[in-house]
Length: 236
Image 1 (spheres, helix red, strand yellow):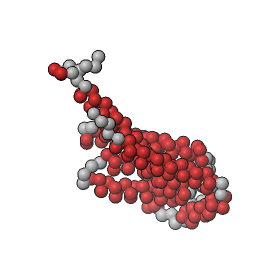
Image 2: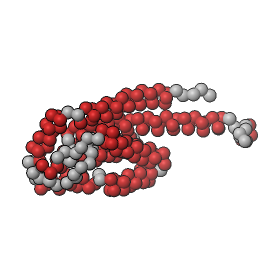
Image 3: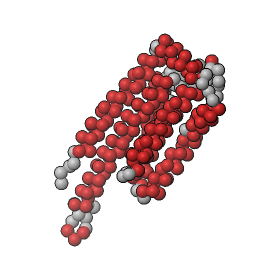
Image 4: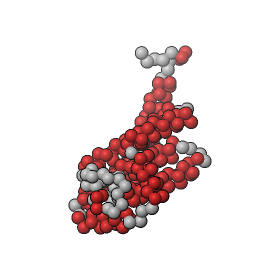
């Protein structure tokens, strides 16, 4: 039986450009960190946004801040994984979702350490809702998680549900990104980088998953075709 090379071609065509995007995001973070005038301009933008606070927007932004914080986010991943397993009855779909969310989210934390860009000067804002002195800013962890979480559902969904999920995913991602800037805990470039990075990272993880599954399917198929006449396998 011939080996199907299409999964390998798909992996190469997806993983190489996506990896290049990830490296470009890291490089852009290092460049932005070294440009004080750019950081100053973004900080001025944050101060202008900070002057436009309303109780309704405060409640909304703080809700997202709580929902996608690490402890609650971990629970969301577990619930989402279980929901997919119950809905599809396919363990592979739930594992695929889990990997799509977990690996790129952890990758965002690694990039934070590599770039090491300090957070905005939150104490200088007029309306402080979330005080996070110190810490690292690039990319936004909340935004990255939101992207991976909703895109994970889009990837494992099928049929008529997918267009609806894509629209909902876009709303969630943009709302999360805007909320991080609104709270003053991330620069605009942080959240933009998070969206770009996360989409690329999800593409790499999913392409790797499809390649592994194709290889596993080929091996299983080889076992069945290698069975000896009479139903007994010739493998010992």
